[in-house]
Image (cartoon, rainbow, N blue to C red; front, side, top):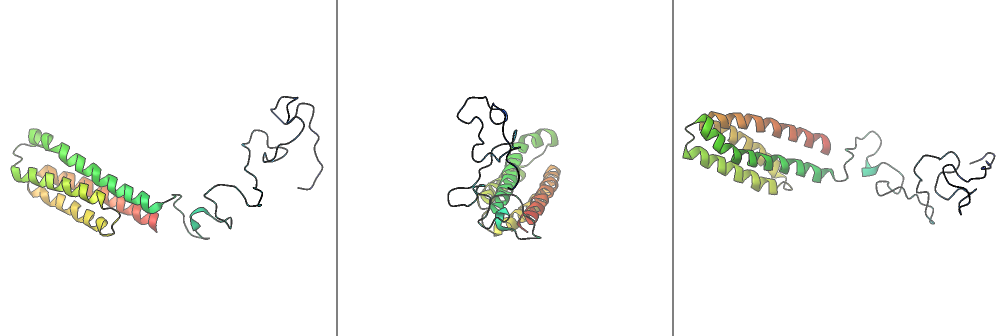
Length: 182
């Protein structure tokens, strides 16, 4: 930085009490004059490279390696985040299906053994698929599962309603996956 060097008044850097070991001097890494109120910067290490954190690349580019004109998701591991979204969606679906059995029986009436077996089988399939989300075929199997849930609406109308709701949620999860991973 070129320019005149400021002399600090008796009392040291802004906001520091007078008389300490830092009185009248600017410690390394604070950003120099005019840095009062800001968090200290990390500066450089002895090798001269910036110590800005793990998200910076060696060339000083964007974190995540996105080049100019590319969109970054801002996530450290986008694939893992998307897998978590899919697994969470399927786990929530399994929970809702199992918890819906009793209210459907009370409110909707005549929920037969075949419908209860279908609900339990679909819930188990949701849990198994939630554990397999790192496989590429799991997303397609999740889509098929939503179709099977809507098809089970033939056994009871409320299963069709749940199928439509979860098909919409799954469609949104697929949209988020496409946006993040593109």
